[in-house]
Image: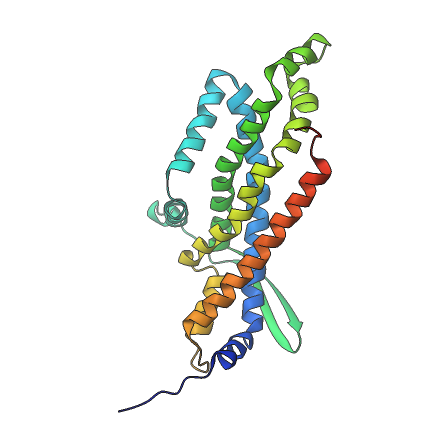
Amino acid sequence: MIFQVRPNPIEELLNVLGFWDHLLSGFIIMIWLYGLALVIGFFLGLILSILRQYGGQIFSRVATGYIEIIRGTPLLAQLLLLFYLPTSLGIPITAWKLEVSLTLLDKDITLTLLNQAILVGIIVLGLNSAAYQAEYFRGAILSVGEGQIIAAQSLGMSRLSGIYYVVLPQALRRVIPSWSNEAAYLPKYTVVVYFIGVKELFREAYYIMTHPYISANPLTIYIVIALIFLVMISLISKGLDTLHKRTGIPGL
C-alpha cells in the first residue's frame, strides 16, 4: 500500500502563492475584459434604452428584440456562437496577438491583451452586458417622467435636447444603485472566456493545479481565486456606494 503525504494547508497555500505571477497575469486579463465589457455595455445599453423609450415604433421594437434575445439566451452559447461562427462560414482566421511583457520581482510576465479569443470575449461580454444595463437605464429614464420632456419642449427645446439635457442627467444619477448590480456581477461572468482558451484567472488556476512541481489541493487553489473575486467585487460595490452618496439626488 502506498501512502501519499500531503502538505498541511499552510504549505499548500504558500505553494499556490508561489505562482503569484500567474495569478497576477490572470487577474489583469480579467480586469481588462471586465473594464472594456463594462464600458461597451454602458454606452450601447444607454443607446438601447433611449431607442426603446423614445425611438418610435421601429427602433423601439428593434431595441426590445435585441434586449429580449440577449437576456433570454445563455451567455456561454452567445460566446461559443460568435467564436466558432467564422470557422463555420469558412472565413479564414489568421493567428494574431497583442502582447505586453514586464518584469516584476525577477519574474517575467507576458500579458496577451488581444487575440481572436480575447476580442470575441470582449465583444460578447459587452453586448451581453448592454442588454442588462439597458433595462437599468430604462427604469431610471421612466422614473424621470414624460412631463419633464413636455416642459422642456414648451421652453423651446427639441425632444432630443430635452432627453440629453433634462432626462439623462437625472436618470444617470438615479440609476447608480441598480446599475451597481451589473458592475458587481460582470467580473464573475468573465470566467466564461475560459472555454475559448483565454488565460484569465480560472485558466491560470488550472495551470497551477496541473503543474507537475506543485503539491496542493485543488480546493486550496479555488479558495484563493474565490477570495480574489470577493475582495475585488467588495471594493467595486463600496466604490459605487460612495459614488451614489456623493451624486445622489436628495430626497430620491
